[in-house]
Image 1 (cartoon, helix red, strand yellow):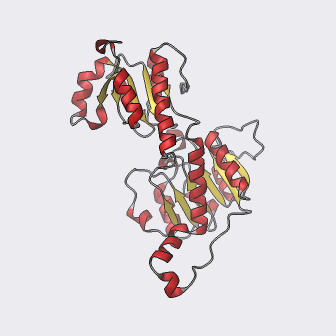
Image 2 (cartoon, helix red, strand yellow):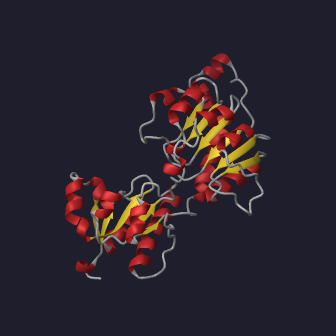
Image 3 (cartoon, helix red, strand yellow):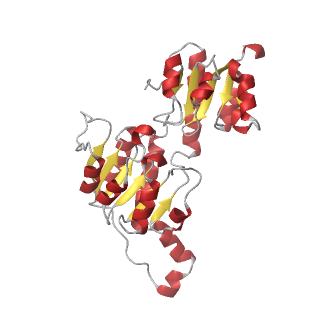
Length: 320
């Protein structure tokens, strides 16, 4: 293609450098994320935009989609697509793609890491050594072992199943799962009520999609059902948990501890949550290894290439 023929692509979120260089060579890019006047940019280039590159947290709403009458595809750098107005895309026949599979193992590793850190109080243990308390006061009090504990998983998709494999490998029992529907090929017990699932387990692990359907699915009632010996691990979306209720439960000892990679208003994390010693915090970094992020970015590139070449998309997201 000559420069004049390059499709216009609106970049809502910058992906990895190598992939961005490939996009720069193939398309005419408009870097919306860094534009000083985003509204002016959209008015200017929207009529020409044929593709949008976004992330799982920053995606086009209906107004942006309507401002791009030639839009053909939204390529999401991430698995979750709750930031994209998929209904508006479906109405126009706009394709949506995401980046599943390539990040499954790293996200599952992070869930395991957060769980082990919460059980073994790894953050406190590190501080115990660095502050000199070990020398002054002696050993830390004993921590909890995860072995033999019962786990409930909310969202037993690719990532949820990978988490289950890891937890079973360290001697934990997958006691059940909750999701949109029962899975025929799964041996674990299905719970259609997250409160009932929380009541039956010692640990609740969240790996479900975000969006309106799961907003505050983990409510005060779920946390109370999990109980004062219970642990919550979240590698899903911050919106899945009622964060105010979680903070209160942690402060009051109504659950024992939590490991959180995601929060309701990222990157803002409430001071009350940051002060707590019984929570492990991670900056939404579950998939953030260089290798996985490169693979995710390449999948964005490959989906755009397939679309503009008239080939089947590699990882299309079905209409809602």
